Every structure is written in structure tokens, then in C-alpha cells.
Amino acid sequence: MKRLLMAVALALFVASPALAHFQMIYTPEIAMSEGKELDLKLVFTHPFEAGHTMDMAPVKEFYVVSQRGEEGKPQKTDLMSYLKKITWTSLTNSGAAYEAKLPKKVVRSMGDYVFVLVPGPYLEKEEGIYIQQITKVVANVGGMPGNWAEPVGLPTEIVPLDKPYANWTGGVFRGVVLSNGKPVPNADLEVEFMNHPPEAGKNSFQKEGITEAPHDSFVTMGIKTNANGEFTVGIPHAGWWGICALGSGPDKEANGKELSQDAVIWFKAVDMKK
Amino acid sequence: MKRTMMMLGFACALLFAATAAFAHTPVCSCFDNGDGTVTCEGGFSDGSSASGVRMMVKDGSGKVLIEGKMSGNSDFEFKKPAGDYMVVFDAGEGHVIEIKGADIVQ
Image (cartoon, rainbow over all chains, first blue to last red; front, side, top):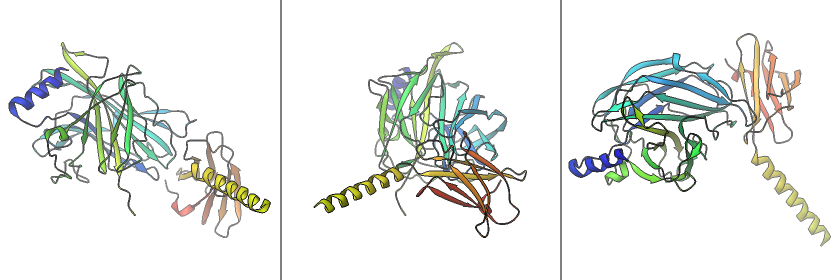
């Protein structure tokens, strides 16, 4: 709540755009025909404007839970050893980020791959609070589904009701916000379009934006979950969309300061074309 | 009239059969284990298992070299043949996948 108020106050007094923090796990393609090497970028930024990129706190956990078939057994693979520090360049600054180049043996079998990142709490000095965004990205190999709709069992997470790797532009994406495994009704969600996707092979965002927001409220869109903790967002454009549940997690304090423990999920949409 | 009804019934049966076929698409993927063996994994697009599905490995002339079934874990491992080969995942009519050996890499 404090974060929302601060954002409102900032918007009112400074008239600067309301920026939403989003932890990214980025790789260009998440719907893969066959297993391959993956290059993942972990960046804590403001994705619509490709603006101020924060120095990520050290990563607490980074792993993938994969499963082939609905009857298959989920398999957890720790990915911490693949993490490497990088410097990410936004349109306005640069910040400490991570990359993980995964060998093909990690993403070789058919099935779903639920990547999970639990970063350490980040101190947002301007707001005087900590932010910890527990982030998920779901990829698939070969069209064989697995555990995409299963909760991982995180303190807070967004569980998809639509496959995050199989969305047409113009469709909808639905999900449920969980805290300690229970749905969170009336949760505040922020939705942002990755308007400046990363440049291929570089640790930076592309300068050219895909679209322009007519108003600040389009940069970070605000929606709420219903009484069952569910949400639906429309998909007006191909590309990457991030959804963040603000302060949905059970932990409310870090190092004696207020903590916003958020749940983030990304999904990708593609155009219908030949 | 009776004949028309029968035709209709037949058309309906065809329709249902077609729907079922589209509802779950077979999927199969193979990779070279790098130790002289190849592993194929199978399943259906609705997440269901391919356990028991007939698997064949044929040589360049179409002769069956190896025949077996998908395991309980929906996979099938075989010794990589010396020359050209093809893997056939045969889950029945309309559910057959053929993968060329040349496309199976590590």
C-alpha cells in the first residue's frame, strides 16, 4: 500500500511517470521445437520504458522445475552455478544484472520448464523499503505439456491458467495469485509490456520503442484479482508481457524495514501470420 | 431414407473421429546421447503418456532394424544404426511421426 501511495505521490508532485519495478528473466524464445542451449538474462528494471535499471541484490535461488507429460515426475535442477554477473545497459543508465548460459543437457527433454528466480531483497532508497520479486518464466520443448499450471510452492507466485508460452496476439492471459499456496483476492497487479526488447546478443535494450503510451496509466497498467484471486489480461500486441502482484507475499519485513514481497510472471504472445 | 440416415451416421462417426484426432496431437523428439545410443521421448499434446506406443527404427531402404515400445516413462532408447536411418513413432492411423536420423543430434 505504501508503495502505491508513494507512486501516486510521486506522480502528483513530480509529474514523472509512475514506474513499476519488474524482475525479468529474459530469453528470446520460450516455445521451442526441440531442446537447445539457452541464454537467460536476469535484469531488474522498468520494462515499458527500458528506464532506470537497478543493481540486483545477490540471487538467493535460481532453478528450473521441468516435467514431461501430466503424469511425469517434476524434476528440479539447480542453476545457481550457471549465474554470471553482467552489466545491463538501459536507455538511461546501467545496472548490475546476471546472465545464465545453460547447456543443452539442461533443456533437452520435451516438456515444460518452469524457471524460478528468488532474488535477495533490493533496497529502494527513495521509498525506504525493500522489494523482493519472486519471478517465474515457463518455457516448453516439443509441444508436450507438463507442469505449466502447477504451483511451484513459493511463498508467493502467479500460477498461470493459460500456457505462458502459447499465446496469440488478441487472446487473453489468465492466472491466479497465491500467497502461501492460497489465492489472494483483490490483489493489486501491475502489467507492463516489454516495449524495448533486449537487443540480440547484447546486454542492452533496443532504443526504438514498439509503441508509445498515451498516458502514464498505460505504461504500468493496474488491475486487481477477483474474489478467487484470479485475473485476466487481454493481449493487444505480440511480445513479452510482465505481471507483478504487489506485496502479495507473506514476508512483510526485511532488515528492519518494510518489505514488498512480490510475485512476477512473464508470458509471450505471437502474431497470427503465415 | 434409411440409406441417407446411414450416410449421416457415417459422416458423424467421421466427424467425431476427426475431432478426436485433432484434440491430441502426437509429439515425439529424439536426441543422440553421444555414446552410440539414441533416446526418443513421446507423448500427446494434451499431456497424456505415450507409454506402449509402437516404435520402429528403419534403415535407408525402409527395412525395419529395431522394433519396440515406448516405456512407462514414454521413452525409447536404441543403438544408433551405422548408416541412414529413420525413427517411426506409430500410435495408429493419423498418429504417426517419422524422424530422420540426420535430424537427430546431441
